[in-house]
Image 1 (cartoon, rainbow, N blue to C red):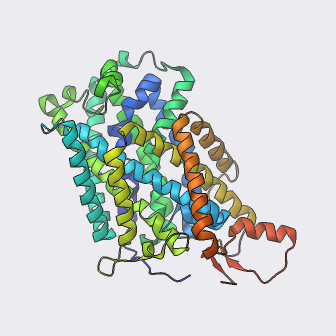
Image 2: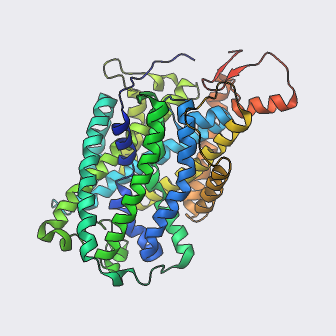
Image 3: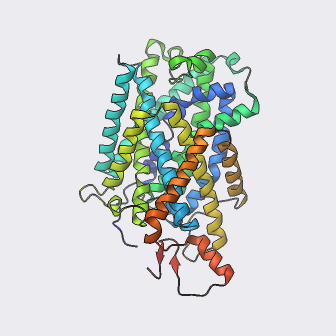
Length: 465
């Protein structure tokens, strides 16, 4: 299946920074207080639980990424494993998840911006829209430039967070950790479902696999390395936030008595004196912009990949001749980003992003199981996920368990993605593709079907196209 290739310009370090940049924003600067309201100090355990449920999908994606190092990530793996119907559902779900998360980042930074400049709530929305436009232009102008900027930003933010944790560990108040699990075990599970989206970036770098140098080595290293580092960062920073900030401020310090949207600054004055709030607010704004940038970079590759497979219009497959970036896919993704910033409340953005991501992660683990069972000849990964199939089964069950705790509206919205993806496939994609995926190949083999149909599972090319 011919298409224009993207330039392999990302080494291990910028690839890790893209992954961590997509995680380092809301997971630290916005979500801790929202999780605290549901679990109390045990929100620390919620981040650990979320990481445990994410890990199987990260290992599964790391394996599949080395077998199919092309743009598209989640969509591509599920499409090649389960066929185009499931592929387009997963692709749209993953796309929406990351766009919601990027929108959440740009809206959430408004709360930190309030601490730096005297602007009204209404003006903050316009500022977020302006920053969204800048992120879109940056992504159109080149992946290599985006990766370099991302590496610098994330490195600086990590330095600031290390300083926060080191200073905070000296002056935290132990009594702020008791009672620990204020809402019991169910509160921890609910909080884990809510903060689950914090880890979405760990697997999103697979969507830019086509632009990574030596993907067989760098993709698994980047995924495993980034989730390990970010789990440690989350636990350390959230523990510092809980130990520094007053519990009532965390639970009710936000707009209209809601949870605080600036938990990192709620105890910052005790760390760095009078300038503490300003220092942390600046770091928060930079981190959230970084997260939005990484999210747009990754999410725009989903419509690109689906267009290449004839499931979406061919215009989304166009590569800009000057910048060698998927310009139309970036612009479409950016347009949705701006609409969400303008019209959807920040809390709903977080819930919807988590719901979509949990559903997609369950499908990722199922896709690896199908690849292993079907064992197509062209499936030759350089990295093998350990613990198969128990790790993948745990990932599926864990994801579904968290999904059940996230609320009715997000679950219904995830169902809406399934219905919408099915409609797009039936109306547009079904007549334009004859792929069956690895599961179709497996079923034909078990039925003993003997005909002229053939399919290269990795590329999606069929012998009768």
